[in-house]
Image 1 (cartoon, one colour):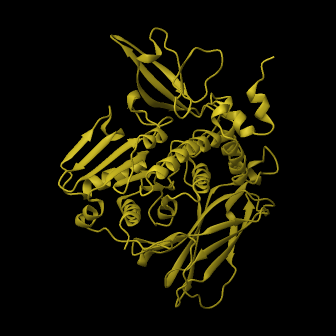
Image 2 (spheres, rainbow, N blue to C red; image 1 turned 90 degrees about the horizontal axis):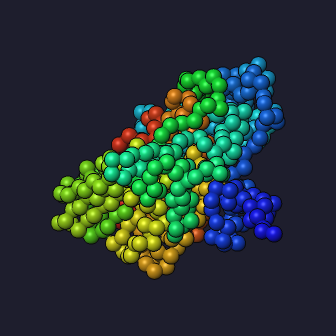
Image 3 (tube, rainbow, N blue to C red; image 1 turned 30 degrees about the vertical axis):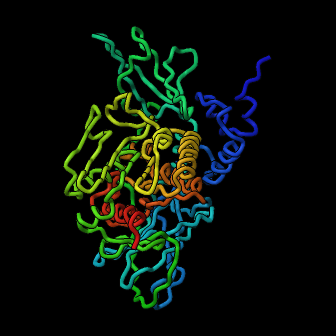
Length: 497
């Protein structure tokens, strides 16, 4: 009898069983990778509501909820901890008895253009403690946002873990005058003729329904098609709610801390991890990048880095756009006089761009394997925004492949510069977007990324805190002031003080 590998792994490695059902091959996973997947999923487990279906009136209501400052002494000093206790109530005015709400918190001083995020501790009884570090002197506003109540989290969790087809992708096929379009995804139903576009090197699967007339080799492009909202009824649109309080305290003394990762002062990001240089002129940026080859891999938030550098480098005389849609890339900017080359390429499926040539669908791991590396090579990577549509298991596997390629690259060229840009917070209007792009999804992907690259010689630009701590509205494509602070951090790794 033939042994079913999926059944064999369902008990010991359920995360792997889910991937095997989607076309991943068991022999490509090392024992350490199998165990790691189980550990990471355990690490990001979220508190469950007591019942699968909770009446709306029993869900968390931010208007009934309140908070108080625990350590309300008369004077706070710079470096002190400001602690806020939040007590959640439902729409009937009754205190919540369980946790699981997703909160975001920050302190901000508008006149100083200063801000920092808080760390949320869930006591799993309806109460939450939020810790803030006071980095500057003056008055601060404390803002606590209920992004999702715990009851809504259960829906998001079901969508992420169980519902495969949250978004539709498609590919165009063409041969001569014959054109066909079919739907594509990571997992497609059994028993239906498909084109198997699984990457041979990484083993990352991707499938499209087979065209009726054309061969699979006739594929010419990939694109995002639409969202699947057929399983939701009555999803309304509106803005989230926010509770704001003010605490006026004078500050005197500085205490060096490693967390949070930084704060804003006069619109400049001040890192607690390293000394940031300010690359305020084109000359400073040029001097830092002189003689370097910069590879930028990822999504449109990494494309923002490419566009920023293209604008700020005055001698980039040649800009090459190779894609069907220029903004999708791949793109190359060249400053021949200063021997600077900056390249941008989007990551492989499930990239949700409008139209990408199938010849340009390259996985980051493969690009790294083809990179020589060295002191003049700079690699920046971000991968998150388009991965929220997939189960976390698939994201873990994508990072395992990227990590393996990074370790091999650093082994042969240890002086290669590798920097990750983390996820950033984003807007969720209209509300239906939260079903597909919620910060709750990105928050967990970010935790997985940071954990998986502990102990590896890579640097991080903490775009999550850089975007969350600023006073501007959340946006998946942050405004130039935030991008500049990300770039300053990025270049500071390459050209430290």
